[in-house]
Length: 175
Image (tube, rainbow, N blue to C red; front, side, top):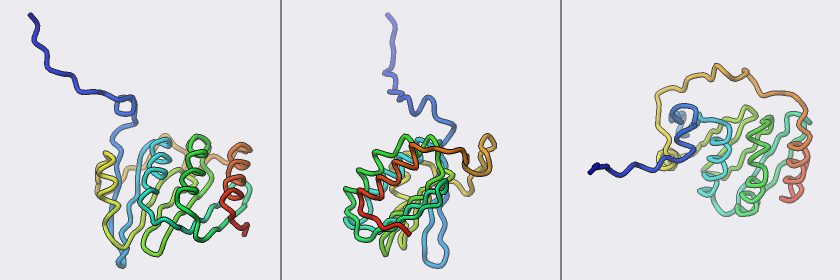
């Protein structure tokens, strides 16, 4: 008879992720800043997931660095914003080059063109949300040596068109 203990469930994400996903957390002038380091898919997914903690109406700024187009919108319904981000998750993680900021007077979540995520708040609440998602807090984040110092500037028409369609769906104004 062979005695076995139960094997913990291993998800694909845990097996194939690129090391430990983590974040730094610091306070400057009364504002807490979280900087998240993970692979591109995880960062975009965290941006989508953590946006649920924003208020029901948010302000949004989108900047497509490839086309140099900027859109802004005020009082956008959070469910509409989240739906638009869900549609863009794959192209955002694949190409980068688009900066999206969703913010309120108290909080801000930003996805950078380099596919990094920053969260800002007047309270330390983002640290708890990130830890609940399985991220580890570090004193400093290591640079990603396998990545170019900036985002790939190759044309990505699918992402640019999808970004413009998202801005139109959300009734954002071009700036």
